[in-house]
Length: 161
Image (cartoon, rainbow, N blue to C red):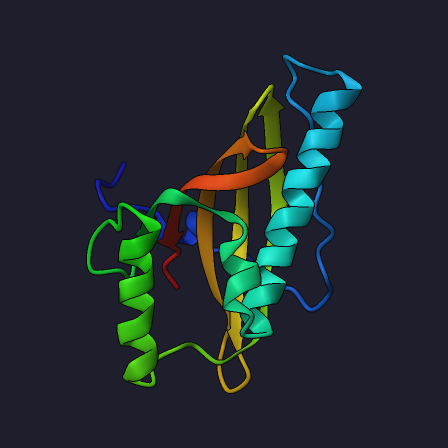
């Protein structure tokens, strides 16, 4: 048995067809409300990434809590509020480094909801028009605030190739 990590097990196969996401309600809460909440969370995540592709920052940010923490492999460290995220994005955009993507979507969703708390786990596919897709493993923690599901913590880890 080797001590070397098995990165091949972490890399999704290349797929030529669209993967249908499955949204599941929590096993511990099989009520209609939990299933409805999970569907609402899934729809919000899909809308958020569509907003990114449309360069609609206001719509994208509508899915984020003001105190969202953002931990991503490519970030300079954890960003602990949306104000910190905004500062990062403004600097990135000024330098011309905003990603230009042909596709950005959440696949293989697993979503659980318990009352006003939800957790979404999925694979994020980011595909530029001129290169191979990148895959990230994402966990979002959400809280229902004012009737809306908002992301309070976002963690994204780029999967190796």
